Image (cartoon, rainbow over all chains, first blue to last red; front, side, top):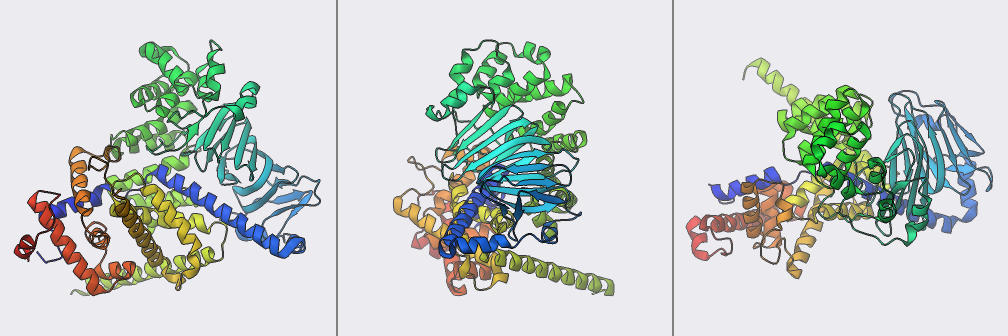
Length: 425
Length: 215
């Protein structure tokens, strides 16, 4: 043994550390990305404020005077030709900033596929990129009404402050209040997922729901849009740490600081006969679990697809993995071929991965999900997880094909870094 | 060497060198984007380097709830100090060196406050180890308890060499030390850890006798 080598026993300890430490989980990566995005956003804002302070209104006008030349957006696109874009009541300057024609007007972005994004008065926003499948629009302060036309392979991303809203076909309003550090997402149709600081992974917001994130208070509120009483009470409500975020994908870490207000609980409990999906929206995970566990066999055999999905979600949030697994399996067994059955395959993969059943079992579920829902909401996540699982089971060479596939479909996805590292290794 | 084997090897060397060049170009572009404050540069930097930084932090500190926070902190500081990067094409080395510097401060801060990676009972907090099998848990607890008894520099040198697998030259560059200092530190750290492991007593410090016996 050379003198800088370890003894065999010490070397074995080092080997265990090498093997077990250092893997960055998907949730950690997502949280970090959101955090870094928020940090960069604040730095840019700070820089912008400094520039404005130095240059004054004259400089701002000078920037706005550079109207967007037809070729400018083309530089931003990736792959196929970018969607056509017209701006009503405003222009886009060379930096992508959306500038209204005057203070009273509300600029409207009209894309070639029929998607319309309308900014409210006094909203600061910019078009970060446009490609053949969608665009990336950032709201720096203010709100926008977004109506995305659903198309296969559509890829739309709306940033609201430090938050990212991943959109498929859907209609919603997103608002970011810079001074209050407050996000509001109100869904009219469809489904979006929101990631950013204190969300602990993506939060799915469905039609008829509203999401509020108060960054300063680390508070996340998900509620039904018709619950005016709850909305009115939201600011006055005492925060309750329920220990489980409303994340749909990643389980929270032990150190998660997310607080989910239990504001809906008291009013919801006074309403007998409430559906489980309404209870889920109100954050009443324990109520759902209590009811289900009274006669779980009967529940799994008789409840409808919506209730089974709500039960699986509540069980996942509360880490009742066994109940979640049974609900998801019942969903697949009783409603085969449905979108929820396909989603269940994805969640079963996540459960297997997090529950220590090993990557082999998870991989089979991810592949099944990708087969059953090639344009589903969780395709990016499933493909990314599949890539990691293949690498773990079959090695880097085998995972490269999946990495290529991922990068072709999601060049800026959460796993793009890992995929490039794999491909370039 | 047979001609076809030689040809294969030459092709491999050429391919490796092309990959390295592509990597350098990507780093160059990213470094310039970071320096110019371009919108997506921070995210790209995270995508490219977060797994590497997280790995280094995690292995240097050990199983600890703060690994995630320290990793993010490194990136915040990196973005604010990116202007000090002299060679944009050497972004990777800069990131590693930066990460190690912050980890060093973090370890010293913990040492100073007696936080270390231990709970009040002297064990690595259990919840961080819950996902591992019992054997790995025990091994990690044992290793990091021993590492807490080394100086910060010795600990980092040992982890970077024996856990992270870096070469001595890479360690010297990343820690801004001379090669001789790295070698000395590694020799001392390896002997002490081996000695404590072999003695089966994590609390035992390296004694002169054992050191001489191993030497």
